[in-house]
Length: 135
Image 1 (tube, rainbow, N blue to C red):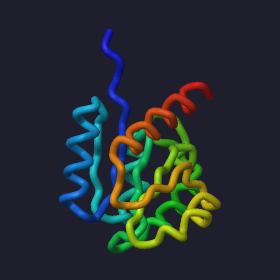
Image 2 (cartoon, one colour):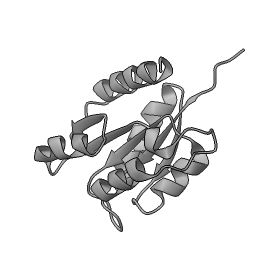
Image 3 (cartoon, rainbow, N blue to C red):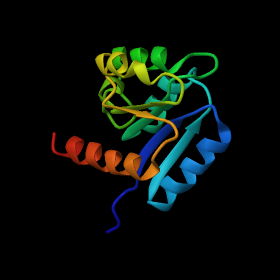
Image 4 (tube, rainbow, N blue to C red):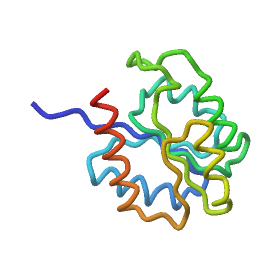
């Protein structure tokens, strides 16, 4: 029996970069849902039950820092039953690498800077999924 694809919610306003990342992740057998601003992230998390969220910091409408704080404060479940606040979040940014300590304090499990090393991102996703499955 084929194992279900792991789901990634990708929140990135740069549509070209988001598309490149989506294609790369899908080639590695991930199911990717894309959002281009932060406003719909909690709703999409509840509806899609992602295994990992990849979140840019600088987004239109609602910035990634506010999204991260909202996700980690959200105690309602996803459709899978997992709490929204328990979904691991990888934060990425190209404009404020000095924010790492702050976003980790707010609950991000990883902080990556752009330009993004996609191979390093994929390795980190695999590590997070392995850690999450052993809980």
